[in-house]
Every structure is written in C-alpha cells, then in structure tokens.
Length: 327
Image 1: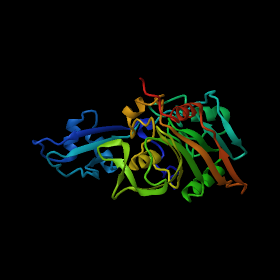
Image 2: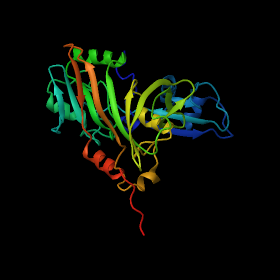
Image 3: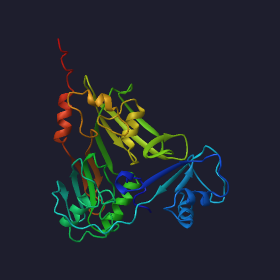
Image 4: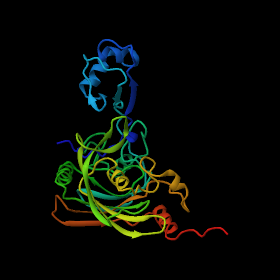
C-alpha cells in the first residue's frame, strides 16, 4: 500500500514543474517527436518516459506517443523533481504534545514545511525530527522518515510522527481505515447557508493549473468534510471541520465550494476582502486543533488538542466587531 495515498504532498513543496503548450496549426507527425522539438531540454526518450508515466496530458487525458494532437489543444507536462539528497539533522525546536516509544504528536507552527524538497532542502520538520530522534532515519522512507500524514506549510496544528517501522505500518492502516479523527478550525469569509453539513464529492487537480485542486464530476478521488459553524462574527465565521479523507487542499476547496473561502488563502480565497480586514491575515487561517485515535500498539485511546496560535487569535479578535465608520 502507498502510504501517501491520501495525496497529502503538494507541488509547492515537492518541486514538481508544470509546462503547457498549445498545439499550433502547422503540426504534423507524432506527439513525442513534436514535443522533443518544442522542449530541447528533454530528449525524445525522456518525453516517452513521461508519457508512459502519464505525466503528459491533453485536456486532462494521457496522450499517446504516436498520436497527432489536434490544433488548439493544450498539452500539459508534469515534470517530477530530481531526487533530493538525504535530509540532514538540524536543531530546530519542536512543540511536543505527546511522546511514547512508538510515536510523537507535535504542534506544527505555520510556516514550517513538513519534508525537504527542491524548494525547501533544509529547515523542515523532517530535519528537526532527525536531530531529535537519532534513529528515525529511513522509517517509512529516506526522504520522509516517520511522516504518515502532513499539513500544508501555512496550516498550523497537530501532526503524528511514527518512531519505528511497526508504528509506521500501524498508523498507515489507521489512516487508510479512517479511524483517526482529525478536527480543524477555519476562519472563513461569509457564512454557509446551512450551519452544519457534509461536503462529499470527487476532487482532482485542475487540468490547466495542477498547483490547484478542483471538484470534478468524474475521474477524481472521494473527498469528505463534515463542518459546523461555531460562531458567526460581523466580518467572518469560525467553522469546525472534521475530515474523513485527506486530499490535497481539501478543506480549502470545500469551504470555497460553500461560498466561504478561508481567510488568507492565496490559492482559493479573496485577496481583496483579506486586505480590507482590520488585520490582513498573514497566512491561511486553518488550524488542526484536535486529533484522536486508538494507539495502534498499546490500544490506549488518545486525544490531543492544540490551542489556537497567536496569529490566528489576533485575526479572530480583530473580526469580532465591525470597525466604526469614520465621520
């Protein structure tokens, strides 16, 4: 089983590149030959390899090397990042909520990337973990030791780390079976029409902007978010979200689908509305506040809570009342 089946790793952090090209009127011949001509940095064999990996698509569907694309179609190439060097230990402070012989539960601050990548080779949570747990290297993979799930760079809150292979496998099973409860708090623009509900649909990457996710009618993965309005304020609404799946940007996309994008969300939000707030949010106002599970090794029921960080609290306090109009 792929332990990252939940698609929790985004391109911004992995260093994946995306290239687009529109098919002109004068094309003739095979797709692989033509693309190698248009992108001299890639050999024909490299193009064929990317096609075989289904990393070259046209209107969302994989292309065939021998086919001739039609005029006006947009071909998209997804180039995987080079394999990064093994991460090195770094003395970075960790906020430890729980620790035992098998796992850690950490309160990740916003701004901390979970694992190294081409864009973030150092200064990540993995670098900090390798310094704190000297025997962690290689647990679950060289590049992501101990990481069984993740939080976006600008999302704060609770994250579980496995400390040995037995725990790693067990936690993967818990996530796969959806027996870990994950609760988030989000500050959003507006307020959903229904004060509580369940958003369930298919989600996939946008065909022409694969840095972003979208709700799709088919060929996506199931994404489920249960939400409840906690408090409605004059300038925003505090919402509690409990997710059953962990798709990339899931809560952010689902809140936007309700007409209530998260404050400070650069990809799915309302930048103009953010700028007009008493305190413009420095990042997306999304916090993983609670995580609960049955310890897969000891059988002990565990539940942990992370209070709102200072930046979230400051924004929350600032939107509780409308600013007075100037005379």
